[in-house]
Image (cartoon, rainbow, N blue to C red; front, top):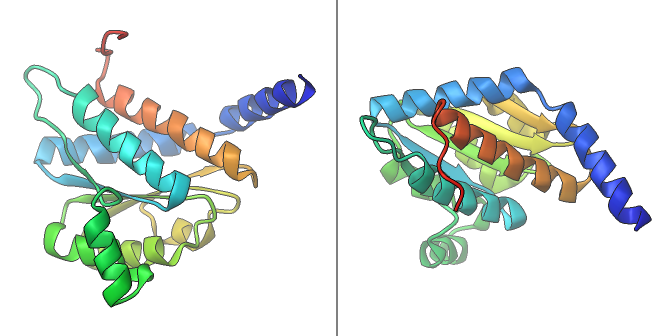
Length: 189
């Protein structure tokens, strides 16, 4: 029982310290991509990869609104055959950048999830994105790692706990898509 209460209290404290202005800046980036018909690409490893997939699901389905364009969104974590082929034939550090090269164009958005902010495959994709006119949003933890400096917008969970970084990222993705909805929230299912 003590662990549960402590974990909840710590997670609430972390969420209260989240940079609201940075979250709002990310909403503006995502809304601009939607309005301009650009694609939002999502990347991450492990639990962060699962968050990327979850966010793609939420953003595509839950932002459908009459009179507004549909959101173009692709989680580059979801095509396991291409991920394995790139990792096997070249290198794991290229699994995201090699997918971006034929798909991304200037004005698109790359959202990278990484607890450490130092995953080579995420960093490579962000570097390529910056060089090619793709806006970069980073969701990290700890001190933000290398990706913090590569991002146009960084949202860093102020904790070293990977579990709580992942919790924060999931909550933030829900805030992001709900904010994209404006005052209209989807019905509870």
